[in-house]
Length: 247
Image (cartoon, rainbow, N blue to C red; front, side, top):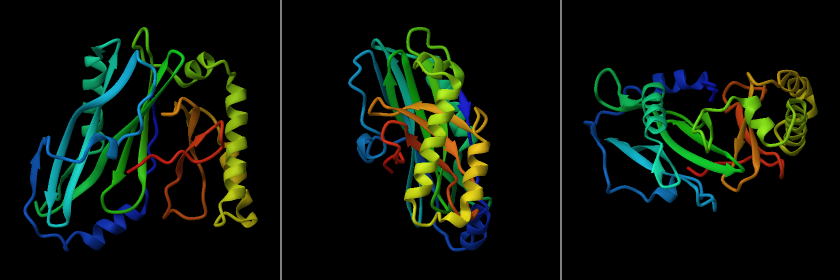
């Protein structure tokens, strides 16, 4: 299991700016009367051995609306991977809470959803924790061997997919350069940050993912010109495009 989390400086500013504006009472529930799962998860894989469904969802509301966190449930050959499922849920609830502010007037924290994909003998579950006070998300990637249900290290995932570490690093560099060349706001004046991002490529900064379409992806950290921007990006290594997860 690889964990990555980039917190934006803007979160602190948003808390200060909005903390006194919400005054409604808060309610919390685990609800069945909520949006369909397809609205907050990725499309499922065609692999009949594996599916990831909704384990539970938690809802909280305040004056500004309703907030939903949805937690995944891994099922292999018709059997729930209960230990994995509870471990993931407990970790996400603790790490990315959605809770009342100290005055009990409004909801702060994160709204959690998930996506997943299968390729060969690997299943990837991606948890997306979206900031409630601003745009942007934090990603967590959980990779498992389908047969053993053991968590896989990044290099084990890459090896199982028939790549060397250097192959994976080189492909990540390629998608970084492509991203830099296709984003209008990233001009040549910021090429030093591109090179800094490439120099930092390693398993402490990037994570292999199986995307919902079965393609191999990478979750990577990019150094960018401003802190007021999400710095993590998930790319499809086949198309070299950003793999945007639906909200």
